[in-house]
Length: 309
Image: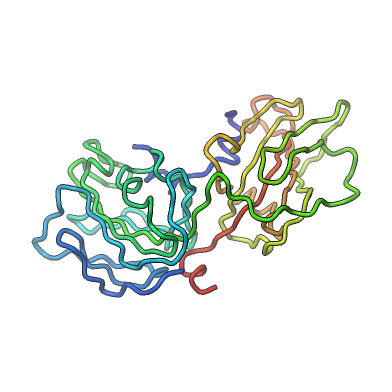
């Protein structure tokens, strides 16, 4: 995958801290030995209280504080969630999504997040609140994470609100093709739910200074709203036809950065969109303009927003 796809379209996994190295209430929920008490309802920023003198278990421990009614999370899904992480011994919160008022998205069960998450969250129903205590081997290992103030001997406590899951086959109802599109556009073929083929016609020039979004087929879902996490499948090529990356057959759906989501605001979920992006030094190694076909398969707000809708 070229640098363009990595920078522009690949997801940021929970601020880098978790990568690689409809709910009910859960107010003051009792937990098994080794698991602190968690106060707050699904969607609320949780408060974690460790029993004085209690030491964390040496093995991975978890409990479902609130059981959701949605589909179960499957291995390889893109999982959308709110979360809070703290150090067991000190109670220091080192990261959370609630203060950012934006959920996070990451592939689950495939080694893209800390091991404790992969082992705990696969099989959990959407809409659940989960608490887990991770010994170092299931967190950041003997090296810890100095950026987050985590030592190699620290056990960690996480509370996770599971908002949504997206599998590689998530597509929904096929959108309606938009008629009378300009003949100067790149040609896009392929049925909804499958990888599109992008062909740049010979002699087609692209000299626009600003990115442009063209709806190729209109979906029937709600319009993409500003500030929402937007989940897509995509394929990108430079203006000379060089492939720059794709999600199809390469890990499945991904969320897109805010700069791309902003271009999609107002477009119905379930749409297929062509993005024309100007050449930008440091974005595309070929320094040519870029064509991206995006299938919008979902959008999500925070756990609190989703549970209230």
